[in-house]
Length: 384
Ligand code: PLP
Image 1 (tube, rainbow, N blue to C red):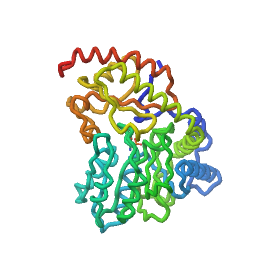
Image 2 (tube, rainbow, N blue to C red):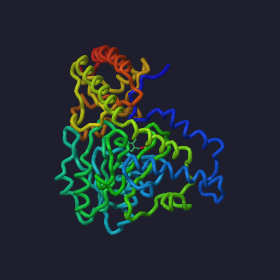
Image 3 (tube, helix red, strand yellow):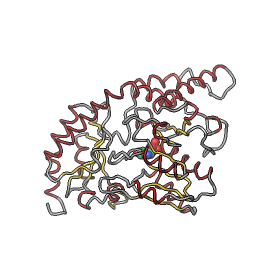
Image 4 (tube, rainbow, N blue to C red):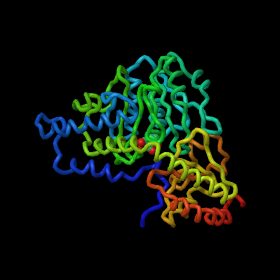
């Protein structure tokens, strides 16, 4: 049975056109792009074409794109590169609401003796630019801040952040894994030094990512070995996935406006419908500055996991702000940083949409959810 899929910030369906573009590289076009012969060389030229497609999506030059294995590798590489390029500087700035790909990497750098500032957010999930200004110092090597939050969809003012970071003399990395293809990203306008992309969030396969590195930025590779990617990322290229990422970027540029109007309208009608039909529900995050595909809703006095399990019985896929680890409930670090009350943090559910969602999907959720919430509240330990 086809799922009613509202978990597109976790991963997306690979577009059929992307699969078609990739298929030859599992078959006849199996050459190694680094080989001297024409058979391998033709694969090399297709990789360069994909690099062009990725660069066009964010208005970069093709040579500023490095293919990686995922968003996590792009994030780790960017921060590590900044630290290695500026060994005299020992300070990193990030936020409390980053994805673990940044947050846990910074924590590991802290264990190696780096000083890390984790900027707070307000109750809408927004940063204070003056906090950033005060945290900057001559010792700051890199500021790594996400373009949009994976849990709430809250968009940070990357252009303003970049200006502060640049005037403070540090490198700026934007984790744009959730933002690319959902909002316009122009690296020149944003004046970022490095920016991360992940394939599986944008209808390309899992296990492929890209890192934009602005021309002129000192770069020391994270993966060391052969001379692939102009000696910036060693390892034989994941050719088929690179081709797929290129195709996904091309498709997204073509249909950007049309898709986003549709996705946002669907998201808004889902959100409105849930708020109207389920009492004690609230939206988490800055609703004015949010990705068009994401809504994070807290249903007070119920557990998010319980809601997900009940939705799962109807093959409806969403995700919860909290993760159940070894039997203990660990509430979302993002919602906690926003100061969302305990009863609401635990009852949060994220719905994230894509071009494949339909009005029928929304109707199914709106039909099931009020009853699910009502039943769970009757069983709730919080006394409702
Ligand atoms: N950054 C953000 C904001 C994300 O949402 C994710 C994945 O959910 C990542 C980084 C990691 O990307 P990947 O799964 O490609 O490693």
